[in-house]
Image (cartoon, rainbow, N blue to C red):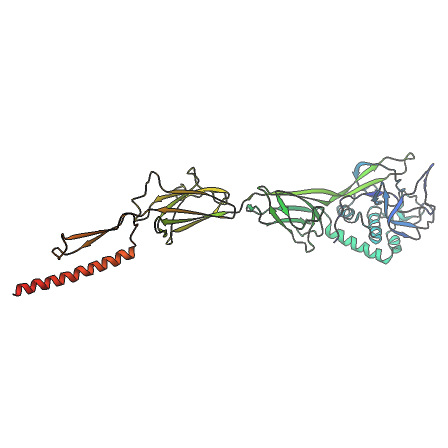
Length: 480
């Protein structure tokens, strides 16, 4: 289906011209109009007792615009006519148009008003006369009646058209009945906020009253804080041929993506523009438009891509990860950090959230609003790191998480000075006292738990062996 035009007019004038090329009224002659696009048919429909050689079924050019007759056998428009707002279009007999007929006319003027096809132009002229100047009874076709009273002989005029134009009559009529207005249009942004720089689908729909989609309708889109894919050079995009809503791929470039769509839809009824009367009071030229402009609009918000913070809690000396460390996530001023959806990152108590490092001494906080400065503060040390922890000035680190990025933060802890008690039976040669305490040298850092366990086992094993030997010596001495 071809696209619709935005500037359409129709003129109440004459679809029949005198063979001389001039039309006369009482006491004055009016210059013939410039015929536009259509077909000349022969013979002409007689009226006022005159046999006529031809009729013109098509458009006229008035003031540089292609215009259309909507009534039959009124005097042709003078190209110098000026139009001004008028009334609702009526039939030649002064009666209101049926609702369906009015809607058909509005649609066809909108859809085909600037056609460049002679067949479509002749078909449009024929349908306009058929709907506005149809005879009320056979007497309206009396060839003796003057042009003001003659009706349009529908069958006679249709029979003179070439077959291609006859086919166009049927096609235009069917098109009007299917696609006439009123239409309704809608434009919807995604329900959730978009990400700046990331495309998402918006939905544009132009529908008939029954909800089915209207195809081939051009919509002019104006975007703010956004870019729309697939627009023509003039900023338009056309509804798809399958009648489904149009999916618009929209990429936000700022925080408030906004789209405005403007389109022409067929009016419920065509309205006219009344021209100045000629001095003889006979000619009345009327321009009618079949469209109305409507607009649709929607706006949403867009945020930067979320980021995350990856925290590593390590031993100051060995750089090994420390599990089980409680860390508070906040802004530098102590307020809760913000999640991507704008809500605060808090715990069950409503305070800034606390996370705990896992087995590898790491933890991640994802889906954070960006850019955002984050502070990580140790809440309580892991077991074995209590000595260096100052609750009044706990270890902390800050950094800024950027859009789509990962902020890497590391917090280190100094281990307690380890002590390893060793018990040796009293009286063992070379050992004074009953208890030996093994302590790591200052500044050498913690002793690995595995090594402490191995040393304890080794030392304990040696003490047991020594005790057995000592008891044997005592027994032997007693036996002497």
